Image (cartoon, rainbow, N blue to C red):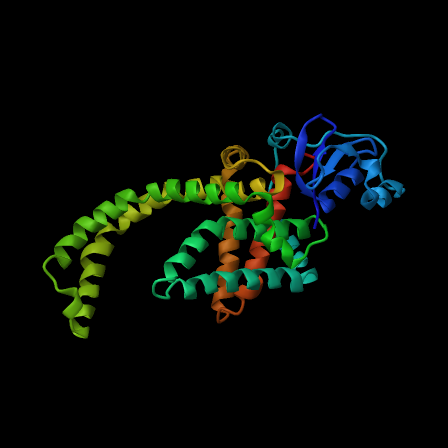
Length: 328
């Protein structure tokens, strides 16, 4: 699939974007025959009228004849929104019902990729290479999965190849986003780790863990549970408060990166700003999605094949409502 760079109606350069993105902007009136563009292989910009692949887009009777500026970050950060939590889930169910093969297939392919990394990561010597590769590529794969669902939500042509969109669109920024968010959320758990270690060290000090019998190992596990984990559970619960707040506030960071081509810092700020306009609504949706997945888990885990796609679709429907709804 070819990628393009575009000079929008606001005079700014956008890209790389796909041919589907260009067609959508033409249909929305954001681009005209005189708009400047170039393919990745081109050296210079030229009018879109000189691209034969877009000729039919301009001859369509529904194509507007005025140029509207492409939305910038200040545009989609303006305005307010209202999330219909039940509506997000019901619309997501209908979307998965209508596109089950694609969306469920996308989740299964993503899961198989993660499982493969996990299995190969346990192989001696070369396992560390697979673990490192998984660490580097997890952001791109997750971003690609969300991009697949986002295109389905918008009714755009989508294929399983969109799972790999993160590698061609925003690989570095997706990696940095996952890394930075993971580190910052992880920092909130430091108090629990400290308290837990203070309780754990006296229990294992002086023990020969390599030569323990099965009964000794079981007794040690019981001691860790009753003397280390349970007494520090209250610290874990307290740490979960800021961890949850940060995770929800940055929930739309990856979609913003792969969809709007923001760098990870701008995407984190944008997600933070919009989510915290109605943090409890977004948290309610995340909680509702988790409950849907719990229900799927209770159905002998088979239900997860449907519940996970519904949850991802609901999240991308919320993303569209918050960042791209024309009423906002």
